[in-house]
Length: 123
Figure (tube, rainbow, N blue to C red):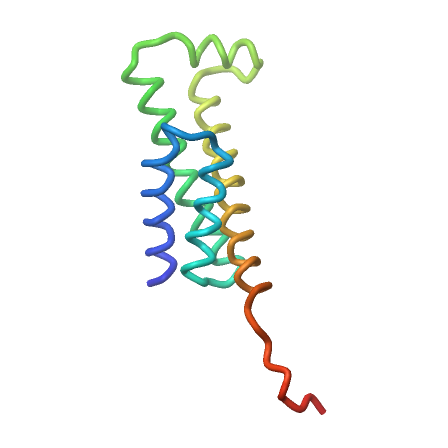
């Protein structure tokens, strides 16, 4: 249940903050949300990756289809990847990686700041 909650919160954070701030501010926000939720590392990675990847694919697909602009096609030709939809897929992969690493960093920060008891006999 926490996985779905973190994924939904990442979608909300990226959807609201991303149009107004650069991606690194969004990364910090995802890390803070992930640290507050407290999932293990790989689960946090997947939740952040799926959330941010879906939003970035959705936003780039929406802008390329409904704006009527030739800019995605021209950019994909300039980069040499083929079509505009290939550029949308590359954007999704980048969002997947960035979101996953952000959430994993937040989870690792929580684990690093978690106090360990010193009064336990370790044998």
